[in-house]
Image (cartoon, rainbow, N blue to C red; front, side, top):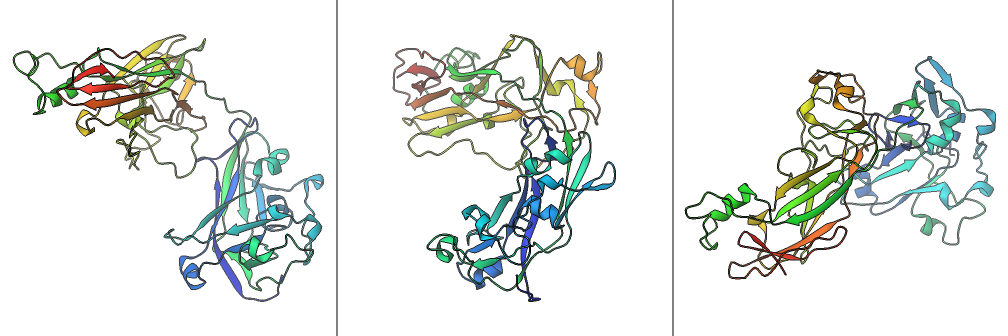
Length: 437
């Protein structure tokens, strides 16, 4: 690397693959540390659409080399000591000012492309293979901190351009001259993590999705009364009986020989990737009408989804006490049914729609509410296993999908829908009644 005092600064951030990062030695919850890098937006504008290629070898982008060359330091915060790699784990690639090209391959380079659509510049995440590098030097129950020693990234060679333009004939025996500036980070980064021996894999629930025309949906029925095109019926004249409408029906069963307790409302403290949008909406397990945000209802002609996912602001703390009403226990073999109305007023007559259940996670544990709360207790205080966020989410998933086509008021009902789990169903929504197509 050149001895020039000129510096080229990248924005660098160290991030784990889970919020509240843990290193699960069993591997059920994969552990990884990423370096997220980006260029300044003004720099991208000045230099036009030029890629940036960096040689990882011997730099901070190889964790073993970075630890050995003192670019990154690993500290055992539980014991207050620095941790060093064992001799057999040390990497010898890239020692000294010259690069050993016999050890360089296409995977030795990372390229930061240009994307002017990004308001803050193009972001690239570089995985450090942290689990393989650190497994033999960490101890269960200890907390550790990975931290840059300074802002120098230890990059021995970098240049403007893509690998294809820089090496049109493949990796050369000797690298062409690179940029003279020393590549630096905008700030010193660090990341803490705790080592645990085992994170349980979540069980699965048996979930079936169907449409039913035998249930009553009072909300949709009231809306149907106000629809001018609906023909007069007993329900819209003298009788207060709601009009039968097709309803979403979910059958949820615990197929396991042990009871499962699941959280149905509010903040869900399970392991999730950074920047995951919060989802405080009731899960499909919650009593009462199904929340349509748990579903995708797609116009099969335009591919438009009537139910759009959105970011949500949560005003409650993740450490707030939890109540029994926020949880549901399913005994072994127990089955519950949840119903919900269709968005009747938002569909286009004569258009086919496909309904699927979105894959959404929830907090869970083996056992009953009394085992979680304590017998007779109705409030669960903070600092319990629920609040630690060291659980993989139980995913509420279903492979079934159903189709429906809303019809006009002049069409006749000519049959019933037969639903076969795991297959598609076609039908027609006609003046508040369900008919087969």
